[in-house]
Length: 263
Image (tube, rainbow, N blue to C red; front, side, top):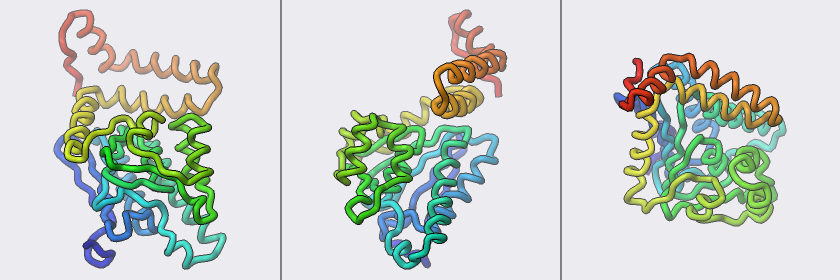
């Protein structure tokens, strides 16, 4: 069993395709988002942001749980407003770091994702879950409304469905999470690796530049009114269209051939 003294809280591997895999490595604490875990995630995201050849990120986890949220024992040991403000600000930086990366971030959910762990899934661009995974924002059970997890949760699913989870603390299955929009795909546990790889291959087949432009625009326009969103989207598409990757893609379509993406 992993302990803080025997292994790092986060394992970071980059393959030769530019895919970074970040594995939460605290199975004994259900991969809680402790201060150490958040610091490790932030360092990894900062590193990836500087990797010009990065293509995708997978966030995975060791053990039965994906992530059980914040470490309540650690939080309870510091009953101080300043401490809590600093902790939640640290978590917010991690969540925004995921959104601000120019490459897609996939949550690979093999088990329980609760409270800030559910927030982590919701914050990722895409999510693939094993059929036995479950999801909840159950801080309300200990008198703590999951306010920060509510931010990405309500941006993933209809408001009343999100509010029901937040107010009742009840868990939903992986299949329910897919229906509600929290995850993209659900497969048996033994097929989880293969399904994530299938999704990665689809992403890697697309030009990096177009994905980067698209991801940035997607989140920016979502937070604006519709008129401003269309203005942003139109400008984004115009800039995208003059980029060599789009020029090659359109020419390949006209020529009825596969595109040869510029390196």
